[in-house]
Image (cartoon, rainbow over all chains, first blue to last red; front, side):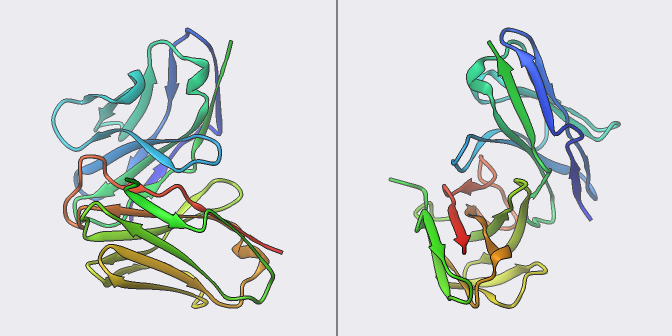
Length: 113
Length: 116
């Protein structure tokens, strides 16, 4: 069965510092990996995805993520955090058989000014 | 031009009532989903329909019954509401179960259900 782990409930960074939100996954075969962001009282917004190709994926709002097959990880990164990046971030995985997206428990990112 | 729209946005109701949440997508997608987000923000798949056919039915009480009159609509009916049903319910759609649209799933803005 596929699964996603986000080991940190919360990540705190100062504005201007780099940020990393961690995600590891378990899936049969090659994974489809996603990051979504949720602002308070809003739906989920797509940030970026990895399907195939380059291991470093660039997405919306300056975010990027690196796919590491040997470590089964897909960590979300940004070189310089903004206060407006503060939100709840979800990693999700789907296998190529096309089952539903399975989400991690979410990581709250808090960026202080 | 909302891609995935859910109604109502907020729903407050008493225990024991029956209620429905509606979802419509105008993206031409074949597959639609219902997810439940609980008070701890966990997102869990409930149901998935592909072109009006049920393809995923997770362990959900049979008080929850999805209905898909056509591939653009997936409604969720809940009978005999309980306090534990209080959550945010998200509808989503994707191109189809075997392929991915460029953004994976497109989500609606959610329906916050409060059972009192």
